[in-house]
Image (cartoon, rainbow, N blue to C red; front, side):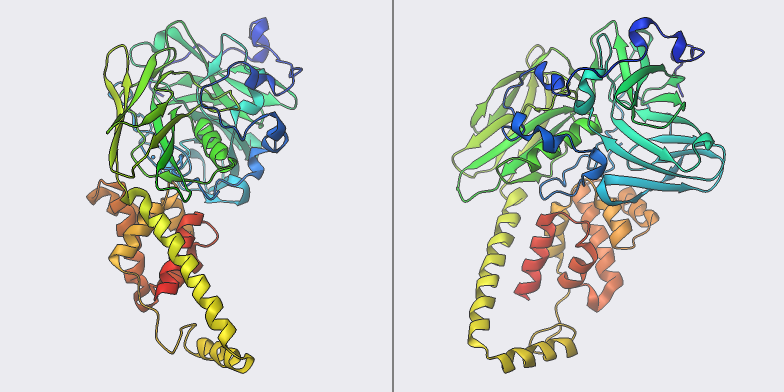
Length: 503
C-alpha cells in the first residue's frame, strides 16, 4: 500500500463508543427516507420493496438492459466486467500492478469464484479486490447493495466504495482483503480516516483498517460476512465519477433517455442497473465512455447541456453520493426528432466540462432493426407452417438434421464484419468475461488486442473476428448464439437470431 492509515487498533473493542456494535433496530426503509432525489425511478417505490430486499447474491447481473453497460461494466483502469473500475487520475497512481492478476469464474446469481493455488497476494481482474492468503484456497464473493444496510451507516461515516460478501473454504488462510474505494485522495489523504463496516447478522461493527492507498483500503480479516469501506473526512470528499446512459425502447419516433451521474462505486452502479431493469419501461444501455474527466464533489451543482437543444429535466442537479438511497436519481433527456446530438455535464461553479459524449442514431438503431427483422421473420415462418402438411414438415425437419440444421441444403453463412460490429457494440462491461467463459478465448488474446487497439468497440470486434477465424466455416450466427445464450445480454441474442433467420 502506498499510504499509511491510522495505526491499527488492537481490535474492535478499542473503538470509540459510536464505532462499536451498531444495532440494526431501524427498519430498512429508513435508508431511503433520508433524501428524495429528483427524477426517481418510479418503479422502485415502497410497494416493490419486498422484491428489492432479496439477497444480492441471488440476483443475476445479466438482465435484459444491463450490459451494460455495466458497469460495471465495462464492466470500464476499465474492465467491463459488470463493475466499473475507472482509470486512476493524475493524483491517483495505482500501486497495485505488482499483484498477480486472477480472472474469476462466474457462478449463478452474480457470484464469482477463484481458486488460488499457493500462498501470495492476488488481485481479481474483474472486481479489483485483492486477497492475501497463506495457502491454497477457494474464495467465493459477490457484490452487494449498500442501500439494504443504509441504517447501519451512521454519521460522520460515509460510504467509501463497494460492498462485498466474501467466503473462503479455509477462512484462516485468508489473512487480508483490500477493497477498492471510489475517492480521489489527491493531497488530502492525511485528513481522511478509513475503516470498514463489518455486517454481522442484524447488526454491524465498524472495524479499523490496516492501511490504505490511492485505490484500496486494506482490512485484516476477523471473520467473513459482508464488508465494505467507510470514510470520515474533515474536508469535502471528491469522487471519481461516471455518467451512464439508457435509452427508452418504444414505438415512438422521438427519443427519451435516462442519464445517471454516479460515483465509481460498483454497488451504486449495480443498483442503477437493477433500477432500470425493474422499471415499467424497457431500456437499452448506450455504450459511451462513462468516465468523468474531472472529479465529482458532494454539494456541488452540475448542469446537463444538449446540442442541439433538448428537453432536460432537471437541467441542474446537486451531486450527492446516492449509494445508500434505494431510489436512484437520474436526468431525463427528450428529443422530438431522432437526430445526432451531444451531451455535456458541466460544473456550474467553474463552468468546466466534466463529461461529454456524441450520440448518433447508429448507437441504438441496430437494436430496433434487429427487433423488427425478427418480428417479420417470425411472421413469415408462421405463414409457411400453415401451408405445410404434416408429412412436409417431417421431411423438412429430417432435411435440416442431415444438412446441419440448414434450410434447402444451403450451409449457413459465416458472420460478416458488419454483423460482428453490430454484436460488438451491443456487448457491455462483461465482454471479456463472456469471451473467456463462452468463447474459450485466452486472457493473453484479449491483452494482445487491447495492446494494439485503444477503442473498446474495436477491441470487442477484433476478439469476435478472432473467434470467427478460429471457427472457420462454423463461425455463423447460430454457432455464436449457441455459445453465448447462457451469458449474453438479451439484445445480442435477438440480433443473432435476426442474422440467422436472414441467411
